[in-house]
Image (cartoon, rainbow over all chains, first blue to last red; front, side, top):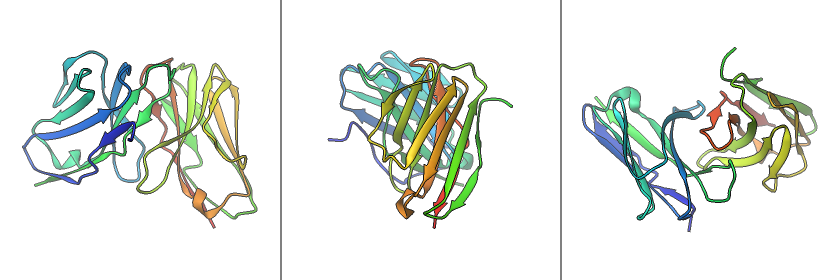
Length: 112
Length: 111
């Protein structure tokens, strides 16, 4: 079983719709969770951090964490063509110090 | 300069060459990382430095040699690489377990 799993996509979303991305992780003791956006040929860019159960909103992005079910999700509201990218889920497992484990990423395509 | 910078941005090297990648962080962080990203593969952690001491070597071949002279600078020395080492090499930094911030990466091609 992979430590951090994401659907590779592509997730095709009409412009203006909500894109919903999911990530599951295996280490129940994980404490910190991050979403990164990576455009093709570029480096990952941090867009959200979440540490406790529930929702966290930042602009058009909402991160949702459910530690009991071991999943973290990202919602992108009012999707724009500029949101087309690969979204990486990263988890800081228990006792891993400051190391992150990354999922394989979900490719999102927003169609005008 | 702000954030995390990396040089060179692109590098083409032969299998017998020796080259070095440089990373510098301007964020005052105490940890730095090297990652490898190959096509269609997840990010692979290579090395971790905390307070300029190496704390992780993720079974990386010895043809990759990291160096961290201080908490702001990180190098990756490359020698006798293989074509399968062609990838995007990313440097990142963080303050303890806070989020990691990535540099723009070096696109390496080994011929």
